[in-house]
Length: 302
Image 1 (cartoon, rainbow, N blue to C red):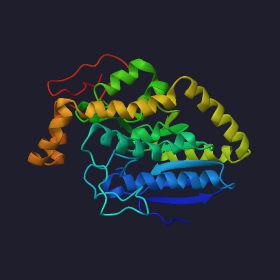
Image 2 (cartoon, rainbow, N blue to C red):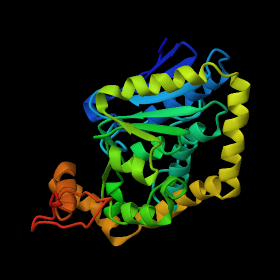
Image 3 (cartoon, one colour):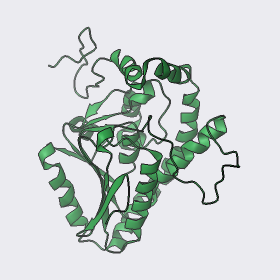
Image 4 (tube, one colour):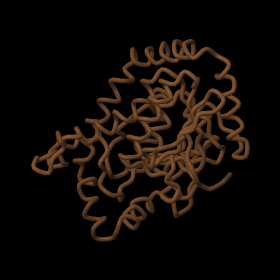
């Protein structure tokens, strides 16, 4: 039961599993993948056999972020689209905002759908990967998973921002202002995830939670998810996501972001990213205790 190019969709024992399936790119998020994810989420929400959804990643990671190098997407194109027409690109601030809002509409299905969604996180959960994960209702991570938003260092702001509602303003700022990372174990301590477990127990932990949700009437699951999400909306969570897109457009016009394309053309994407991140050493934040670092910027283990 698939029919998708970028994800695997399956229904079994009261749950839908959606696997991000671009392992050769660490499940980098293309617009086509996001469109398929949105379609699968609403299919699961419509299916009375489904009580909950699990989102996970194939291969070594949940998702390393947005795809900056993939082919041009055809997702969301109208059936009457014509080469005779002049369509939006990225020529203006409004074009940029429009493109970002389209991408966000696909992601927001996680928040808006009635049934609960569990994120099963291993390996890297970076940048756009966190935009997917933090919209989920419950996040369970491997203890050695890595969470961060490195593009905040030079590419823009966060186009979805549920960090504030999970970790509070101080940790949101500490991690978003630097792009530094925390492990799954540390993410549990600050509330970024519900729970972190040894990697070998991650699947069993997620499936065990799905087993318990499968015992509950889906309409009751919906009622209890939605009242909590409506509480988040009263605290501005959904409005903040719309504002986050426009704020990201503002970030795209910072000098560092405007120079990024030139650096990529000159040195290639991999080298441009390596140079950006090199000055941050290991790129880690420490949740407990002082951040003593060596002359390379690496944390000194206590």
